[in-house]
Length: 436
Image (tube, rainbow, N blue to C red):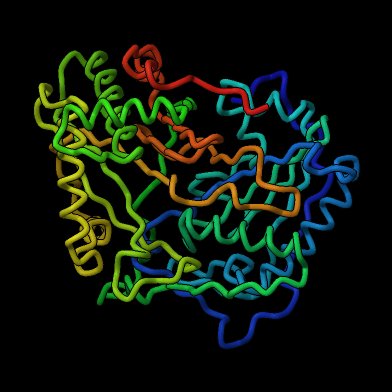
């Protein structure tokens, strides 16, 4: 829960923003892919902060800021029409121009207090309450929140249905929206909707209901920052001790998180359990023909690094095995042999789940995505963030200012209490950092 000292003072308005022009009849139905049919109706929650200095004279004109964003959002929805539609069933969307919900919120605090609070749930105040990562929601396929702070700064957050697209899709939506806010006459390249063209429904027909839940019960999130110098130090250390001479920031940080979290779990359970780190990968640039960067959909697969013995749970070994698995992944046909799609088809059979041989950890890195390109006309955001969630033993990595990297770690409270005191981890990570 967010700190009691911080609260939403008022929801000044709740509007339904419709596309500026009607969606053509030829685009009235948007079909879900197999991967999208398997997912529950969760949202991809992205947030962007802008200071009062960036807003200039607008910082004292919240109504004008809201109107500006509402008008450009309406224009953006002409291209992003599925988000303004209605989900008919688990197979398709009726693109009926129902609209997108736009909320105005005022928080009784300066922006710095929200950004710099160690409690990740405080920053979640910038997202629509009860929406981000939730399995069920009374809201539509997209919910936008404009948050005004006492200091005159603002945050703009988007919660876009994961049934339509992934984080790449959500960011592209935000970049195009920001472009239209900055320049109302800008020409936006229409997004390419992947729909069910790559991962079609099974031969037996669409899945009647989702098979992959989002579970948040009993979990807590902590935010850590790795400075660019600490990332370089860790990469050099791993390179000198492993077969991988050019480890990437994502490789070394995900390996460090995997090792230290598994160590915390082992301390609490009393014995080491064979473990694997699952890492998701965007296929847009890997499949042939390559998909355009503004492709909207869920085009993902994953690969795993397995550690069977506790003696192998060390950084050089983890990174070496991770690189091997990544190279194998790149040589695979990730459409016909898509690990995620194959798992979904097994789940859809409704058979009793098999006992897992490995304890599972997941890392999702969006470090290559340009979150700081979301410029509404006020410059690059002071900070970009994601909401808490969506399940246990998850690490989300994203860019941080000055070429650093931010990690959002989800664990149950017992494991987190051990992990957050790990000296090896804290040698490289700071529990939080001042944005302002």
